[in-house]
Image: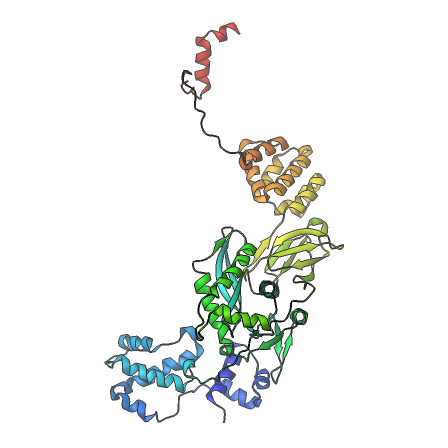
Length: 511
């Protein structure tokens, strides 16, 4: 007989995870006809009669039980954290059900019983106690925002917890990819001076390519290489069984509440993460929730059981190739993120070195062309490094208008270059390139905007304007005159006033 748990799992796999009938049959071990039957089923009314105890709780509640049951059945399709509590059911009955006058306690008892029958109350689901030994760890990601150098990032953080001691370590990240995972684990391993004997993971696509019938896993090659390098055992949870690594699930919430509130602000993520590991050490001085000892005292036994660090360093960066388009650009993340290489490397293949923070573009000799900050998120974004493009056109100024580079420039820079004399364009472009190299492309654009206002179309004026805008010259305080020196009144700014002064002194007549 197929249980409600099995039916629920079938429907979650089909409607929630887009698995087809054959895939679900392979995962559950059920006949495909059985799977199809429950995928198509529309009537899930619970069998009658209801338990006698529920009927006897309050006869007045009987008219409202179908409505309560419907709300609880709908919760099976809702996120776990957005399901009805007994209090919410009671408040909705008061507000929406005509004639409702039962007590909250009565509603709470009924909701508790029905949740147990519908397998919605996970707290009442029996679980076998899990025994953890020193040296074992669990790994998971959480979501967290942070400001780096005043820029807001909707990021992630990785937590590695040790259930035996309840010690945890975390690292703040820009996102959740293979580079973020490997760099964080490597940093924690080196901080604690060893490697866990085994680490428990979810079936994240970063690591697991597919789940094999019978419980096996196919893993990504990079993760397998990392695992073999550090010699730890990777253990993966059963699908939809996050409670199996409950220690790290709780540690994710603890780390967010105690280390990431308020939203962190810092200048450098790498410096922040280094300090975070020291803060995690200090957190171990508190008492263990179950044993009469501190977390740090029990973690000492964890550390004794760790595997030694490998002698050689694992290459944490990923290398891949990309083909550029006619403008010397390429894309990552399914075309959502666009990066520039250089006009010299248009319509060719370049090598990319990927870390969690950067995308480094390498030429055919693996020499660096440009380094980008790595983009994250599902929106379309572009990272454009103008220096290779400006350097290129400064050496070929006559071809500027006939290249795609001119069309990519901001409108104000296009206007400025059109106003410049053709013989001057080479010097102007070289100056703009130098300014970009010195303080960035945005500051070069602002300098050009000022030059447009002053109608200054020569390279020397650009240099002087940039110096006045961005030179780090401290502002001097007003000079205090010694006693005895007369104070001069402010001369008027208009030239006519100066003419009057000159005429009054007879200078104009003597000229």
